[in-house]
Structures are given as structure tokens and as C-alpha cells.
Image 1: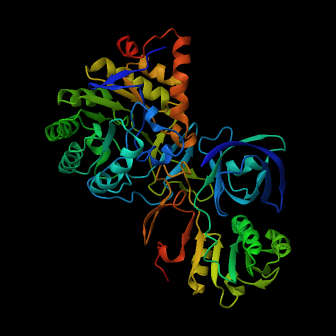
Image 2: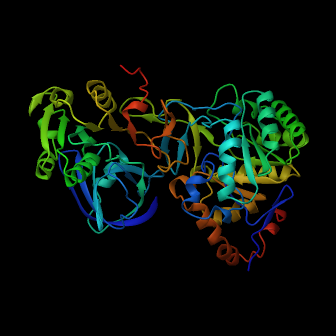
Image 3: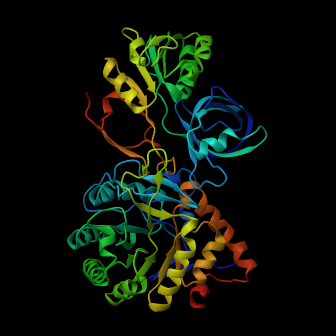
Length: 302
Length: 247
């Protein structure tokens, strides 16, 4: 039997497959379909200090081999997540979960992370400094190395849990941002968030998305993500979670060969709610086909 | 929600732009009229949500208007082809508050979910009135089908080419016990303001997943944020918060 287990910042995962934040809610919809304990873990919906409705509709659009979203971090706020979502989650998921956090100031990031630090269900904090769909927050912290380092240091001081900084591809040099986070004490990195894009409706001659721009995800971005993971994994000594358009077990292997210690699966969950289950079940055969005995050896082969 | 493969049995035009598709397959996940299926189509990434017109143990009927690439592709499918569908999505209409004289108000391609609803209300012995509003006579469909169920059918057209001239609000009956509406948002709002009884209205939105995971279609209601795909598409009249004010 091939060994699918990997280690992520000192916590063992049964397999490297992690549904990405914003595509899996707080797990409930998927737990109705399959036992979500088969997952390595999952990254829950991006959580902020205060509740957010997000951007006006429409906030979803079709794209070639992918989709655009401009949801804008809709979430019930950290207090409600801790009071309601985490207790619900405990009934359906017994592994440590990854808490995805976003904010609009350093203080907001810190306060939200500190609250989640007190939750024993949370294994890792994934700090989103890369949301392209909110203004004066999100991505603006992730496009400047000094800002990214400042958030990293502040959050690290507020938690004892591993801190994974989630990076934006909408930058000139993602390696510089990655190095800044690593030097500031990040325990891991995850990349890529969505690529900024837009669509225009030919009938109305207006942007399809009310927010005008949105984030592109899906298979369309896979080669871009793979290239960035490859560059970042060679530049830092901390684990990198690779994501961006992963839809098959072969994509998982390819991303891990690029240097990813684990992978996140995003848009695929939305068009095939069984995507992660399918990928996990297909991994042993796909590994056998390429003579891979243990997934944990792939990261080192870079 | 369940994922099943359906087989196209029929796919024929009802009007110039509106098609009826009959699919054979497992309908066990469908629990109420007003629910929808989310269909995977070759060459398109996102599934396309289409409301269910009617269903039985062996299959379901969809009625859809060709409005873009997805529905255009759907209109070209032929009997025997397979369709990957997520089934049993959305809450659907609640039949329990219908009362003796429920009213169904339809704007254009809002017909499909209300047909399945009408058939079930008639089976429960209710006296159902259906008000159909279309732009022009050539766009009318399912008038005879509603009448064949035993509904009292009233038709309006904006240009007056069939039935009463004007919007569907021109033909609303007096004192229904409950109303069910489906159609474009301005029509829903006009109906909402014209009727005093309680009712349920079905909304449309661009969706990502169709099953509540992506938060792509969330709207604000008086009772909190609701995902049109999962907590809707049917909302009760007293929870609706119109974007441009409630009157």
C-alpha cells in the first residue's frame, strides 16, 4: 500500500489533499455527501473579525477552463464561527482544521488569530494576505514584502499554532514576498490565491461582475500556480502548500513534484462536489503508475 | 443533493426561445416543486442551474429559455445523450400554507416550477388560480397545460396581443389565501406590492456551485444572509428585503 501521509508544520496529514478556503464553507454541505474525515484537513471559509456580506451580486462568472469570483469574504465573523461553526464542525470532522483568516488592518488580523488560537480544533492558521476582492485589505497586505512581513510577525506573536501565509499571484515577484514571510517567522506558505481578472457581458457592454474584477481559479491557472510553487519552494526552507486549478490525482503529483508539501483543491469542489474524494481515491493508482511509494518523498525530490 | 446521470428523452421547442427537455433518471433527491438541477455541459466550467418543471419516479421535465452559451448548448442536445446533474438543489415551495384558494403568479419563463407546484396543489384538492404574464402572444406557453390540470388560468400580455393588456398584476384575483410567484425581479416586486396575503417568491442568481459552498449568490434578507441556491431560491414574502426599498 503506498504511503499517502505527509507532514505539514509538524502535524501529520493522512494525505495531502486539503479543500481550499472559500470552496468548502465550514464543511457541512460536503459532509452530507461523504465522510469528510477522509481529507488531509480542510481550510475553512475566510474569517474576519466582523461579519461580512461581501460584494454585490453578480459575483460569479464563467471563464475558459475556470471561473471568476468576487465574493468578497462573506463570513459570519470570528465570534460566530467559534460559537456556532466550530461546534457544528466537531460533529462531522475529528481532525485538526485549518483556520483561514483575513483582515483589514494588522490589529484585525491579530485579534482574529488570537481568538482562533484558543480553539483546540484549529491546527493551523492560514493567513490570507491575498484576497483580490476586497478594498483596503486582503491583497494590499500581500503585494508588498514589508507589509507581508509585518503581518506575519504580528500574527506569530499572537499564536502558538503554525502560521501559514497565503500568497497572492498578483505581484511582480512572488519569491520576494515568500522570502519576506519566511524571514518574519512564517511556519509555512500557501499559494496561489486567485489571479485578478474580469469579463464583459456583450449584451449589456458592462462588466459581468458587480465588483468589475474578480479572482480567476480553476484548471486555467494550474500552470501559473505550478511555476510559482516551484520558484517559491526552491527559495524558502518552510513547507509550501500548492494550489491553483488542481482537479485530478495527477495534478496533485505534479504540484508535489514542483515542491509542494501538500495541496489545496479549490474550484474543483464547486463543479464536482466529490472532487476531493475522487482525487484521494485515485492517488494510490496514480502513484503506482509513476513508481511513487510515499508522497512524502516527492517534496524532497525537488 | 445527489449526483446522477440522466438520459435525454425529448428536447423540443415550445416557442422560438423556450425549450422543454424530458430527462430519464433517478429523481429520488427531489423533495419539492421549485427545486433545481445543476447541469454539467461540455466546454463550460461552471454547471448551469435550471429549475425543475415537473418530475415523477422515472424522470423529470425542464423548461428553459435560451439566453446564453449554456442554454444554447442544452437546446442542441438530442435524445439518447447523457447529462451529469446535481439533483435536489434548493428549498422549493412549501405547500402547507397554500389554503383553499392559492394563487400562482408567473412572469414569462417563470412558468416551470409553478407547473409542478400547480399539479400537486390540485391533487390536494385546492382551487388554484394561475396568472400568466408574457410580453406578447408568441411567447405564451403552458396556458393549456395549466388549464388541463383544472386551474383557473388568466393571461396578460404587455402588448395586449392575448388576454388582458398590461402586466400580470392586471389580472390578479381578489382574496387568494396564499400566493406563489416566479419570474423576473421587477415582476416579483410588483406582485409582492399588489397582494396583501402571505406568499412565496422564487429568485434567480448567478451561482458558482449551486449547493451552498461558495457563497456566490448570497443576498440580504430580513432574517439574515441567505444563499439563493441553498436557503432559497424560494423566500417568504415577509423576509424579503428589496435592494431599492420595500415599496
